[in-house]
Length: 282
Image (cartoon, rainbow, N blue to C red; front, side, top):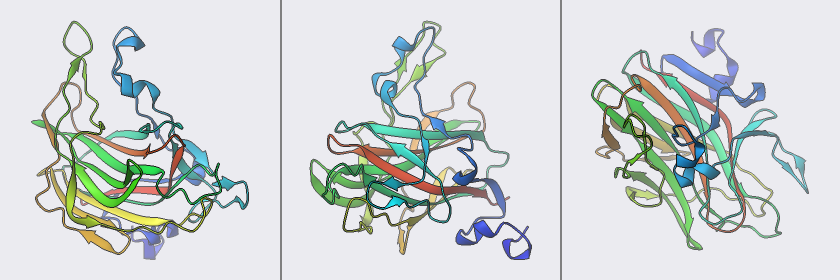
């Protein structure tokens, strides 16, 4: 149904494809978003170490000590992903679903990111990165497009978009050899997207938030990057390769989407998402 012909007015700030797969407005709840945990079998002890300390997403009104509750882009609650106050720590939220047709899909969201406002400084060097990934599988392969905005690394501003195509090594989880795990968000293997430098609005103090628009298109039929846009910048992603793995058992038609944040200092970093729309051309 056309938004301009009686559809949901909240969708007018997006440009979805013909079919809405999901529209998660976090004013109504977490909508199935949960913590990304690693595979285990028989005991939590055999989970890979990086997965053991991920943090679950929360609902947030963006409350600050000096300004009160700002709310989200156009409502009260945003999905909040928070790292620990430990340099290099990552927090990852995931929504798990499946696809009904291998078509073009489009991710859209409004986001912002900041360090925890525990210091009266700008803190623009504190967030290392935020980003998203899909975990997909068809009849022949598992495909994992990863994209991140590298804000800072080792205390130096980078402000550029990156992708990953290298697969992390698999670890066997159980003796029957039917459960494996790999930490695909490891710091190794990230590559710069060509001409991917972009300065984002990062307002003058740690408690001011500016929302940014993000759109990403991917083709499930060919498993190829199609389009990446942040605010007014459209990046050239043609020819970029996702992580590719031989198809795995029990993952048919998988369509998982994850959002993540990472800190570059011993200070918590928050990434906020106002709402998330995933649409398809079918």
